[in-house]
Image (cartoon, rainbow, N blue to C red):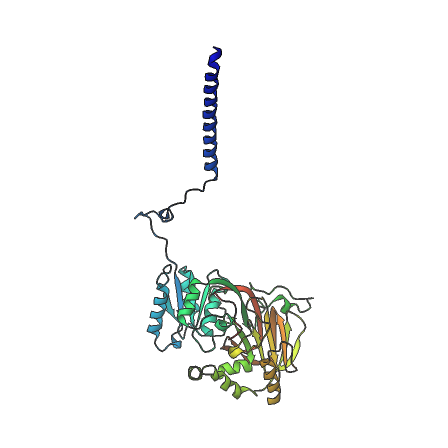
Length: 396
């Protein structure tokens, strides 16, 4: 019996080794299971199941409002729009509607909204862009701006391409940007007046009265107009009024320069400005310009502080008496000096009421909208969604 103990020890040792080996194997297996990378899904797992009964997601739809007077060949322009949109796989064939003399875009834009499109583009000058923007103000439908006019100031201030293909590509693929909209009321009625105008004794400005009418997404009131770039009265409007479409087509921006030279010494007029409900400020002016953005063509900056999304309107009162005075104003503006000049006063506000002794012509984004003795300008902060993919350009 005593001679058998080596055998028993050997067997016990072997059993312990086997047990230890099994334990280590199990432990290593569990450790490997905890730290191993999960199995990568196959590429096919990312693809939707091939089921003929499952409908594909609907493509997005865009409505394009086009001003036919800006093109020598409207059919070619329409074909280019369709071809450009269909080059984007996720967009359906565009809905294209042309503006008319009777309806410059209000009705066409309203119809597109009713159809539930994902995007509405305006192809035309600043007037066409303004008209479409008027209807889209306050809605959640984004707007694409495809400049095709003489000035194209809104497109230039936003740094947008100045051609149909480039403009549509930005509109279809760009990012949404919320910008301010200027609002003009000609000879405002009691119902359209703000608290500041009705109660001038208020200590300070209140929020602008942006909900006083129901024109968002519908026809404008007869005496109310949106603007995106600038609105003005006096010389500014006279220049627009006397510049013909034929001259603009032949001379481009130079047509406005020629008209300005003819109207430069028009009679000045007495005016009173009530800034955000404050005390009236009197001027004998050549022109009053109210801007949502300040850059003109050729790199000229009339309002250095103006931004399209700052919730503020910039106002310029220009008051020279003669040619010498105008020369001083011109040098001041071309030098991009932000401070005031003896014949040029700047203001910033959310609303301004301009009162005149005699009616003056009024223009919005280059379109003359009539004459008035009282004109109210206000800002609707970030009320319009536009498509853009580039920062605001300083070279326009």
